[in-house]
Image (cartoon, rainbow, N blue to C red):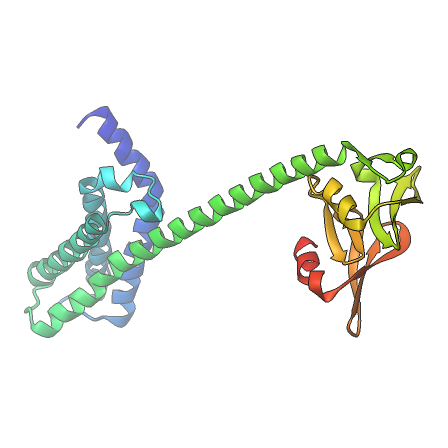
Length: 281
């Protein structure tokens, strides 16, 4: 056996040892307490030793099958990469070898006559071995996919935060029909923009205080100027808000509005934009 095979065997044994031991002990305890197989031929001390042999058989069979399927078990498989034929062969061999070993153990160590009823019990107990390993592998796969999704979500969130921070640090020039009234301001400082007849009221923070400026333009044009910065959202046909300044969504009967961080000003939320606002909060 090459060093590579030995290293693979050690790696797999470390990965599955606790599972093998747990399955073996479970089989031993089940047979000890429920006594599905005859043990009348043994004294009390020898009976426990005899029953422990079933657990030892299960452990040895698992190790033997591991060696046979060593290369397959070492693969880091996703759900799509699992080969159903190899899986079936792996579990079938566990079941077949365990059942045959139990029958031989009953016949030649336990001196028990083999009947159909006894063989049926052997098969039922032997099924627990591949079933347990399959559940363990399935849970491991699900947990792996869950961790992968968490990592992907964390990465997306980090990129989104970086993008948002980068956008917020940029400056934007909000144009007015009167060129002298153009407002050059950092994106992060803009709190909201509200329609006010032929003007747009822009609320922004300056020195920690809320300032307001009227720009002669339409809210639609202001929205188009801000659309490349993904921190703004419509809350009402007459209002746009910077989501970084939202404190919470409030409700009173059928009326919704937003309170803003460190600002007494409120922003209305219409039913048309309610779900979009909720998704952002």
